[in-house]
Amino acid sequence: MPTAMRFLSCLLLALLASTAARAQPVAQARVAFDRDGITAVQARGLADTATARALEADDPARMASISKLATAIGVMRLVETGTLDLDADVSAQLGWTLRHPDFPDTPITLRMLLSHTTGLTDAAGYWQVPLDGELRDLLADPRAWDREHAPGSFFRYANLNFPLVASVMERATGERFDRLMQRLLFAPLGLDACFGWASCSDAAVARAVVQYDAQGRATTDDLGGQRPPCPVRPARDGGCDLAQWRPGVNGALFSPQGGMRISATGLAKIGRLLLRGGEVDGVRLLRPESVDALFAPQWTLADGNGVTAEEDSSGQSRDGFFCHYGLASQSLATPAPGCRNDLFGDGVARVGHSGSAYGLLSGLWLDRAAGTGVVYFATGMADAEPGRRSAFTAIEEAMARGE
Image 1 (cartoon, rainbow, N blue to C red):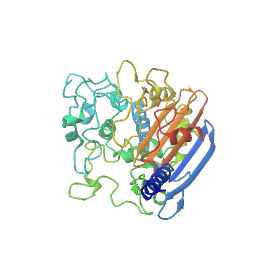
Image 2 (image 1 turned 120 degrees about the vertical axis):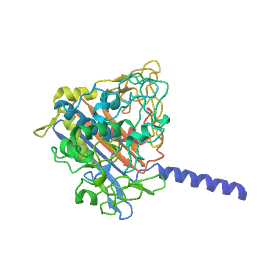
Image 3 (image 1 turned 90 degrees about the vertical axis):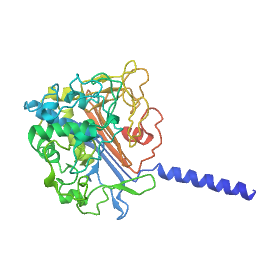
Image 4 (image 1 turned 90 degrees about the horizontal axis):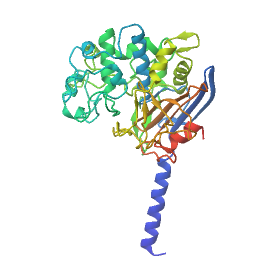
């Protein structure tokens, strides 16, 4: 074989080997459950490659956008007490007027924020506001808005909605978002979970699952067993004095859109809570009608009334991924033209939420009719292979079905 041909052949084999290596998760976990408890647990790979620490299903990981569903549970608890109203103008709670600049007469509500129908986009960013900054300033950037669609008329998945939700929650209660979620969700369920690392235990910090890019480089939560020096985006001078926090000024601080750290088994308990209509293991957090409200459709794809893939660069979805959305909840297997959201490939309607960030892919999915569910995540999947039967990735299709 000529030298040039041998070189090209070796290069091709190296590229194929590299692609194959990237296609394998650094770590992955899957927990199946029903209304009564966990039915199967799988965990393999490394939670931390630097120490060769093996992954366990009880290790906390940053679960990306499944965090939105957890945040919505907190919202519904406050709705039940009358502290919040899904359909009221959020401006009163924020302390400043939130309006789409092109549709100033249309109030924006929590229902719109939770269902991604506000007209907001992620083009101006959503997590970059520093500790001493104000989320309100980000909303002044014209790129933050879809200039063509009025609030309530169009679906566009945008992470920016959820820092606003957290700001509303903080102003209504006077509590810092991460501590509020401890009170509303994690503590009552006995979960060692948190938004950011400030309110997780030392034991949870020591077991953090490191997340990696496609080249195996750590992207987040590379803690080395130690609490991070700053659990939020630092102030503009580099400082991290959390005493600067003011209720509702910067709801992005603890990443309500994607910053929940929780184990697969802990997330399964939240899944069981939802399967059981708001009660689990003798603890009732929500009324059944509140759980129904989370999953009731707020938007369904029809006649081009929404964007069906996530536009943020961290997402790995493709057209047909979003076809049916509730309050921070996705639905699967939507029987409509253009929909490719049948993750399990069985035509069964399921609800829950996916996650994709920092090389992690995750999912929490519930078959409410059958009373069963599954939680999964995989790290090191920043360039995951596309799915074969859906707009999800191939690894998500495999984990969903337990393959």
